[in-house]
Length: 369
Image (cartoon, rainbow, N blue to C red):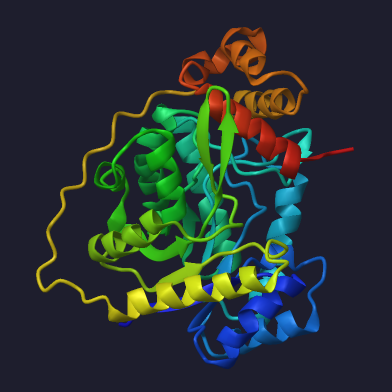
């Protein structure tokens, strides 16, 4: 089956203006829609596009607000699942993906997804949530790898964790290649070494996007902000991923709406998309794929109960949102009693990562009343 290339859809006027020529030219072969961003209301043009691709059986769903690895079930998740049931009742999705990590706590909702420590308890929690998602959606469920990591420990663990989470439901991996690029740069790891950590046989979908840089006095950090041109390194990763992921069905290009105010930026968006589409269209699968041994995951450690995880996640987002220097936040994470149950984990945190996590929480996090 040919690999289809498409867009992740946004409701902003600049995204509509940038993407309309691609739709009119018939170049958007498949559409991905972050449906939970539209539950507060959809413009008519967007709803018509989504419905067209739904009727054509060419619609993918990508959730952003479920918070699959929050330590405690919460009313926002129940409301999200109810809305999902209505969504899949009115539209036909080929599959649905969500993000690895958590974003909701006792005091925050709709923050940016952050990693959780890998343990038997977090694995059981995540598997149960994916089973609930699968039951509500009635289609295959997948998870997207994160760009953000608190340190090299998260980088090393994420691939095995994703494989273990997805195994019981035979879920798929949505491999975001700009996220891979972020971790390559931020933690000085080669592409082949990093990809070797992931269950590439589970990859059904690739994401391709651009991003930006954060500069600190203690180092530079690549961010998955979806607001810039696609780096050359990411195009290189597309060819590598197509070769190493034998079950890829779609490649989705991402760019946030509201980030292309000028016509030059909108033209650059179309150029990036057309270059990606041509790269995929002309790629030839090797006759004999090189077999790859998947390393056995490390032994899972016993963790803490979900109540302790929930308390840790709540204290973490509270601390990250405080107006104090990143150095002081890292010291608190590694010394204060509130984080004692997860001391081994917080000892692995990188100062740049704490600074970036603070920016993410301050920008995207919404405090509950």
